[in-house]
Image 1 (cartoon, one colour):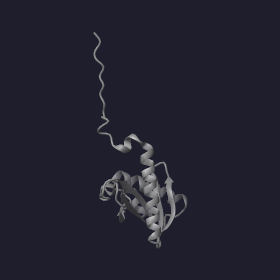
Image 2 (cartoon, one colour):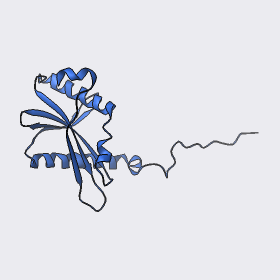
Image 3 (cartoon, helix red, strand yellow):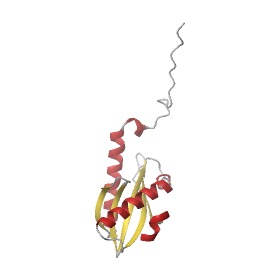
Image 4 (spheres, one colour):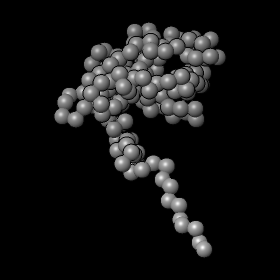
Amino acid sequence: MVPPKRTTNARSPAAAPAFGRFPWLRRWFGTRSERFAAKYLRRKGWRILAANIADPAGEIDLLALHGDTLVVIEVRSTAQPDPQVAAVTVDANKQRRVAAAAIRYLSKRRLLGVNLRFDVLAIAWPPGSPPTILHIEQAFSPPDRYQFFS
């Protein structure tokens, strides 16, 4: 007697988020949000120095100059109407990865003595409505061992 095949599905199709099924849609949504964030900051008078800086530890979404301060900006976006939903996704692990990438980027360019801060810019793109922006300045300080450099 052959036992029946077990078809266990860890994630049922009904429970899967829309972005999980289409990774290209997730990339497009993220790129759109980062471009919108850069445009928003330029309108406020900020100077965007770099975008999408790749690092083995993580990625720096935007690097900007605001006055005499170098600002590392983590851009988050959501299709929900509240941008706070996206902002809270920057947890301690993400903060650690962003800080490590920023410190490594600055040390390669011998810029560890500059004023540095970490911001979070959350964008809500509800369907059929204009986007809502939540900019949290000094959202977090470098965790653990990276505090020495801030």
